[in-house]
Picture 1 (cartoon, rainbow, N blue to C red):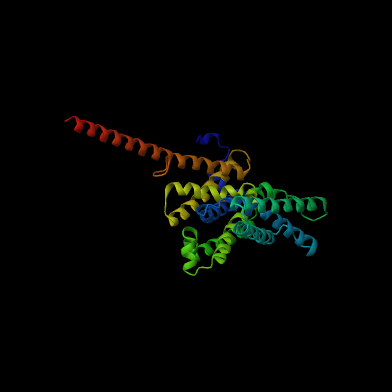
Picture 2 (spheres, rainbow, N blue to C red):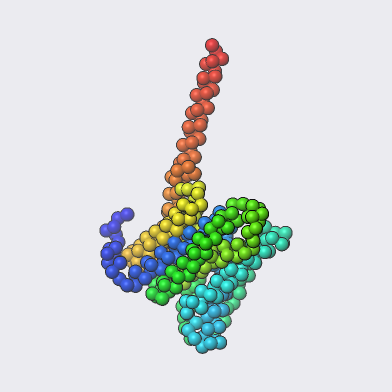
Length: 320
């Protein structure tokens, strides 16, 4: 990278309180989403993060309406918005799994139906808020696409606290999560309640997802949950290192994206982080050892050489 093209040096970036707030906020979001997204990725339910993030919209807006219209308090309180988003996000993830289990339709179809239903209700609430006379309604539309520049120190602390709760749930139920992910039949035989573990697992994923809605937006949040585990999976086949690497990738890409978005002239942080993650994903798919395109091509070329040598050796033996 040509650092001379950057309008803001890293030292100047870190010296500014607003920039540090954006950096810390996005790092917490990226780390938590990356680590917890591994379980959704390994259960082949990467779309569940999309369900959670889009379903968080009606929860956020309902919390805003209740706080503003019923209690007359600040509808933009991060705690209230998070609670609303988590409630509808977890409800949507459990509902999609229940529909897929009971109805004769595929899991992807069930998740898509739940996603559009919740999102449609959220758009309806957004119209109600836009047409109504509610204090502090300005900026509510930012939850669609996010705006990291509006993060406050309180938002960062709230993101760190809720992210820590989600990570603590994952750590405390690590064995149950792992067994449920890789061998659900064995998990039930071992007496692990599937619904309870699923609720805890998708609840933790929901917390990680809705944590970044204010900064990144619900549209892009799915990239923070899905891409770091996809990158980490290219480099390791063990769950523990994968979760740690996905969290590190999410944090590192978020930090680099936050810096570049500001240093290059006020670009939106969420999209820049997504581009950084995409570059890391392409590099991993191309060059990671064991599973990359380069590794597979090398292995196939070696096998072809071995096969050709064995065929030639057999032919020479037959001639003798």
